[in-house]
Structure formats: C-alpha cells, structure tokens
Image (cartoon, rainbow, N blue to C red; front, side):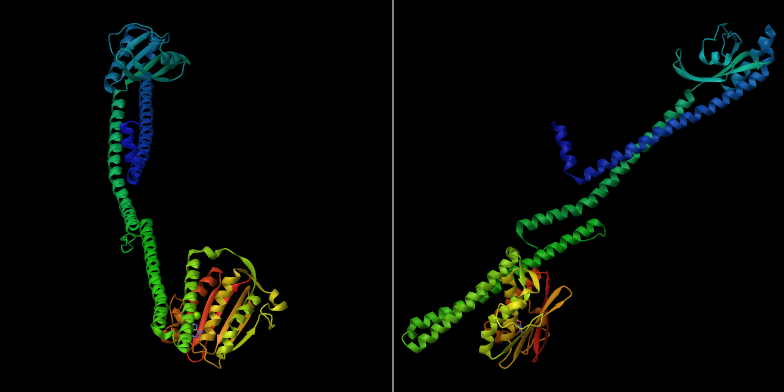
Length: 494
Ligand SMILES: Nc1ncnc2c1ncn2[C@@H]1O[C@H](COP(=O)(O)OP(=O)(O)OP(=O)(O)O)[C@@H](O)[C@H]1O
Ligand SMILES: [Mg+2]
C-alpha cells in the first residue's frame, strides 16, 4: 500500500463523517452527470430536428420558385435560378446548391460556380431517387459539422433536379458547449454544497457518538458512574443517549447496592464476632473457673457461632443467586411434598414457641408425614427442590418467629389457572404499612430492636424473592398490625 493509499484509508475508514461525505458526493455527482448527459443529448436532437424542418421548408419554397426554370435549361433560366438561390441563401445564412436531374451542379450559393457532378454525395443521390434526405457530416476542408437537407424538385411525376440546403452546426455546437459548461458549474456548486451539508450533518452525528465513546472509555478506565451524557436531541442519536444514560444509571445503582451490601454484610458479621471475642475474653479472665458461669458462656458461644454460621450461609446463598450459578439443577418437584417438608422443618420450633401449625394441601388431603403419601404425587412444578424448600421455610420461619405464644400459623395450597398458590398466614404482630414495601430488600428489618432479639439479619425474604423470581413466580404480602400477616407464593405448574 502506498503512502497515499494509507492516508486515504485512514481518512476514510476511521471516520464515519468522511464515509458519509464521500457517499453523498459520489451519489450526487453521478446523478447530476447522468441528468446533464441526458439533457445535452435531448437538446442536441431537438435543435437538429428544428433546424431540419426549417431547411426543409426553405427547400420546398425554393423548389416552387425554380421548378419551371429547372426544366427550361437555358442560360436565362440558370441565371434566374442562381439569383433565387443567392437571395435566399444570404437572407437565411445557409448554403444552397441546386443540381439537375443528372446530378450536375447548376447553382451554388457560394461562388465560384464550378460545374461539377455532386451525384456521388449521399443525400443528393437519395434525393435524385425521389426522397427527401438529410445528413450531418463534417466537411474535411473546414472540419466543421454541417447539416444538409436535400429536396427533390418534381414535375409531371419526374425528378427534375435537387435542392440541397446546408447549414453549419457551429452555432448549435457552441450552444451545447455553453450548456455543458453551465451543467458542469451546477455539478461543481452542488458538490460544494453537498460537502458543506454533509460535513455539518456528519459533525452532528459524530459529536454525540464521540462524546459517548469518550464517556464509555472514561467509565471503563475509572469505574466512575457519576457523569451522564447531555441529551439535546429527539432523533435516534438522542434515543441512544437516553439509553446510554439509563445504562449508566443502572450500573451506578448496582454499584451502590454492591457497596451497601458489603457494608451491611460486614456490619452483620462484626456484631456476633465481637460478641464471641468478649465471651472468650471473659472466659480467659476467670469465668471458666466457675462451672455455672462457664456453661452459660459456652452456651452463648454456641448460639453466637450458630448465628454466624447461618449468616454466612445466607450471604453465600445470596451471592450464588446473584452470580446465577444456581440456575442449574432443574427437576420435577412435587409441590405438596415440598410444603409438607417445609412444615416439618419448622414444626419443632413452633411447638417450642407454643404456636399452632396447620396444613391444608391443594387436593384436600392432610398428610401426616413429610413424604405426604399419595397426595405428594400431584401437582408438580419444575425447579430446584432445595431452593424452593428454602424459599418456603424462610416465610414459615418468619411466621413462627413473629407470632407470639398461643398464635397460629396456617399453610394452604391451591391450584388456579396453571399455577399453584401457597399461602402462609399467621396471627402475629403484623407489619407496619411503611415497612411493607421494603421487607423484601436485603438486610431490611421492620423492627430492629425486636429482630435483634430473634437473631434475624433481614436476608431471609430477599433470598425467598430471588428464588421465586428464578422460578418465574411471585411473592405477595398482606398484613395488618396486631392481627397478622399473610404471604402468598405463586408458581407456574409444569
Ligand atoms: N410474618 C411476619 N410477621 C411480621 N413481620 C414480618 C413477618 N415476616 C417478615 N417480617 C418483617 O420483615 C423483616 C424481613 O424479614 P426477613 O425474613 O427478610 O428478615 P429477618 O427475619 O429479620 O432475618 P433472617 O434473615 O434471619 O430471616 C423482618 O425483620 C420482620 O420485621
Ligand atoms: Mg426471616
């Protein structure tokens, strides 16, 4: 590739604007050239036809004037012919030749008058044969194009001579040349205007694209999502800017959530870890000597490590759900068996708390074991059994946790329009309307003081919602403070 080629390549293919410019320029120039060419050809043809008609009329008129003298063949007749020919030729600025029936020259508007035979010239030949003929040709002597019209003069059904009227085409050609120059000027001017318009247009398109690419580069280098693109237009580029800004907004929000999650998680991990630290310190300081105190401290160590373990498990689950790693493991899950197992898992806890637990499954059978017996066969959904079990247990555990002694928790499943609906209802403390929209958020706890007591971290419902969403289902909640809450999970059946 030569240097010029390389520069051209760089100039053209590195810039959208230049590609646009060249395309416009090419299209417009080619179109204008085609139109001009067509117009020039049409003009030339039209002018020639006009001229031809005029010459024909002149020849016919001259024929009427001299047809008698043509047959006479006397010196006077010849003179009269010559006078008529010269008069007409001068008046019209044309060259007229008259030949007799044998093609001999009788009269010529441009002297000297030489007696020569013109019957070998094609148009005269044709006219002698009786037809009006015309031709255009370049005369070798002057190198000028001429248009000739040869007209047969007839008397008593015989050709008595031929009148040939000729005109130099210089004038027409000059006019065509002038037209061509005008066309070229138009093409040039249009080209200049095209360049200006497309430069402006390309700049209009290019500027926001460049801004976008600069911002994308800046974000990818610094990871800073604070800048937005200015949106000043309503066209596709404007739409692109809006989408781009939405994307930045979303990334910014995700980044904020990520940081918040890390801060919350660290905080939640710190509380039990510090408590463990102080218990160990107390044991070292002598509490281990006293058997009663020792067993008390060891018990609280066990509780704290349990809490730490379950917190870490929750964090691992959430991060697994976030990374999408758990999307695998699709199996056919019997919904009744699933609910029954979830209920069995919290039964001991409910009994300890003095909360009554009741279960009513879709087909009306109340199984007495976790397996659910015959009822477990139907209905089925597709998904991950352990995840779904986790989702239901989280809600069930909450129901038992947030229901005081003597309360009741009921689990009901129903089938509606290709879906299974699982309702977990309690007679517990209920949720304030202000908290209701937030309880599915990570680390959100409605009553911080009380949940600290029960050891919650606010991850349970977030995990549940994530899992159910992954199974194309929904979770809804209704609650009245002091009366109780009701959570409904809906999942599509297989
Ligand atoms: N059945 C319920 N009755 C009353 N409040 C509830 C109920 N279920 C959830 N909540 C409220 O919603 C909050 C969020 O629940 P979530 O299960 O996410 O967290 P948690 O129970 O506090 O902690 P954990 O992560 O251990 O489950 C709870 O802290 C509680 O205030
Ligand atoms: Mg919970």
